[in-house]
Amino acid sequence: MQHVFLINPHAGKQNHAARIYAMAEHLRTRHGLCCTCLLTSRPGGAESLARETAQSGEPVRLYACGGDGTVSEVANGIAGYPNAAMTVIPSGTGNDFLKNFGPDAARFSDVESLWDGPSFPLDLIDCNGRLCLTIACSGIDAQIADGIDQFRRIPLLHGRASYLCSVAVNGLLRPLGHAWTVTLDGVPQTGKFALVSVCNGRHYGGGSTPVPEARMDDGILHTILIRAVPRHVFARFFPAYSAGRWQELPADLVQVVQARETVISAPAPFTTCLDGECFHWQEARLVLSARKVNFFGPKGCSPNATARGSV
Image (cartoon, rainbow, N blue to C red; front, side):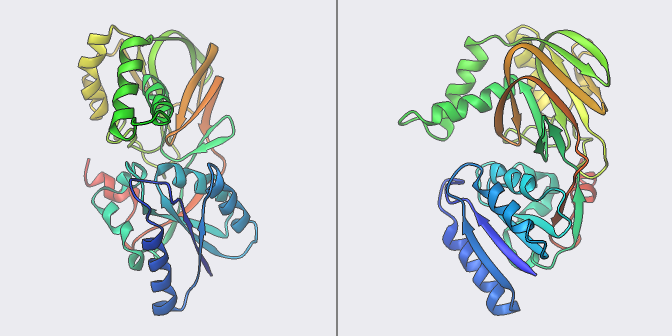
């Protein structure tokens, strides 16, 4: 069994490479495991390395050492390969994926509790062929996520400064509503929407939990739609949306459905954010993927059982 650590040295606020190398060495010396550390040098690098490793056909456990982007890349790389399984050693800023494990998320920082943990399959969202583990969002939240990356390239606008700039520009200066046709299982709805999110997991955006009922292993996707409203109304509703209290919001503005297929069509390209990675399409088709990803974690820890005890 190979144990491969895929390290994104640019994730988070500091370089965690030395810490990850020490973890791999610990497993080599204490348990005699065959461990390899690989650094990703470019966007998409973790996905390519994960796929190349899985294609060998040999049993392999991969450790995604980075933020949610690195986790998503590794999942895209090994999805559908029965010989490969992945886990996460959190090294990013938000680490939203691991929040699905509730209080057990902290246990993923201890490699001793990971290496021989049980493996189980997780569902994936397929959006135009790209796979997503947690939430695929389109609308104001996706615009803000896209803006953060753009503002981050400006000198002195890093971290929270880039986030605040993106919130100001997209929340105050750009249109809140989008003229879309949203088709749910073949039934179209046309109008202006503030956001449409398809949820496989529960957490995104550094703390939002739009649909707490979502589970990554139940074969069900939840789609939440919020129609366009004036900015002051949206600002008043957003805390309830973020906290997962969508039932408290007006039914004529908010809708949650378990759609097998969600299609968003627009007259011009719009932004869809998949696990924090932004894409621009004129039509996005979102379905439950036929492929799954094998995931392993600490013994007694699962996103299903843990979350149900905390919601």
